[in-house]
Length: 406
Image 1 (cartoon, rainbow, N blue to C red):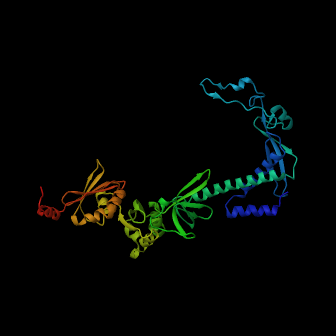
Image 2 (cartoon, rainbow, N blue to C red):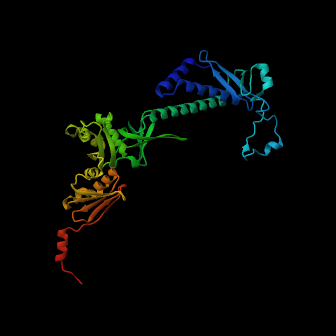
Image 3 (cartoon, rainbow, N blue to C red):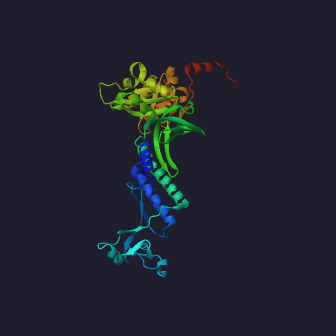
């Protein structure tokens, strides 16, 4: 006999706080009771089911038998059964199950109990109720209930966070372990790997943190909610929260190139000719982009307007440097950009960052050439940069004045 008041209270709490449907827990309890009864009282091979009456708190136990005939089971084990049989195409024919009186009932016998019985039906036979299941049986029931509740909770968590995949989530720093940060998201714990963090950021236990939920991974060990603050999509989603024009789809991100914590370049376009895509992201007096920059630890963000004209797009992508000309080689998917000598450092950027991000943003291999025609930097679409020293006219004159030694 169960205390119905306590049980209803527990079921209500699990449903409200953990999002586990009452029916799932109820099924788990019945399965646990059946397992406990089978372990303590049933014969080997018996199929036991339990039915819990929530009106009275009593439990009914039943043995289930499947209706079979000689075409669906083997009546006895023979030597021929030990040798695999194959059909005309060479496929192995699976053996029929061996008749077990604890699991099966012959059709001829079943018809005495149920006139319209047919092969495949299930017949249920009531069993004697037992009030004392014993210590082992009770422990078994408890373990099964816990397992079933965990399974139901796992399904519930996957359903909830699966809908929030590729969205920004907010949580509290739970602990730091081997460079990874574990974030309490309420009903589950997310992991922010070291490589997905913004370089230079430091976190304290209990601190609030926002990150992109970029993957919900289900494994035998549990559910892994993988977070990232370095992902390009995190920047996009932050703008989506700050800029109504992005949220309603008027302004769209066409490309993003990001080096987390340092600098990013984004290309945006507007579907409404009356809406300036760059101005929308910058905001009045730069308030919108400043808010995003603050969240990203001061990361500099270059916002350019996407252009179908690839020459114009590449010219914009290499800003703030001023470009003299852009030549495209479609065969090698290579863009050669010519700049004045005083614009070389701006075009390349510190450590090649500007040309590297421009190549990532546009998807073109970019060569930066000085006005004299010498290549000073080359960046691939993957962001690899090779810089070449350039001798300016002043340097050449100085070299000519120096005495030569034999």
